[in-house]
Length: 100
Image (cartoon, rainbow, N blue to C red; front, side, top):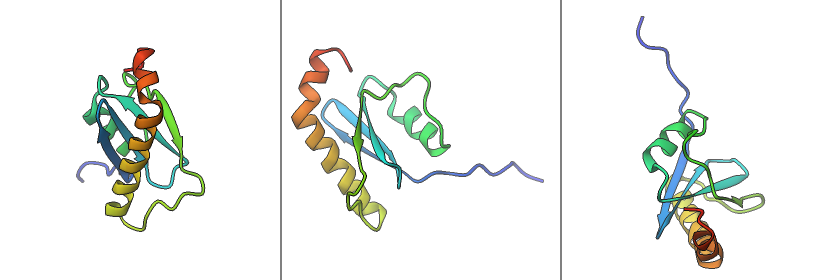
């Protein structure tokens, strides 16, 4: 009979400095986490279409209307660029306020 199959969601992850991002492809937001959260647990939860109860996103980046790419290589570059832009603009403020 075998194990039941679990749907795997396509999740793109990226790191930048003290932050990482998780984006379920085609969802309207990229979630941003401080590196104090568990990258592996967040990725595993997102792939199951869930969230990690011990890791809370500190910010969301809106993807509505953006060209996100046609394949995972382009999507990874998109998420990394969005995370870098967010970190450069707002990351220090979030860090100073203890969100990581």
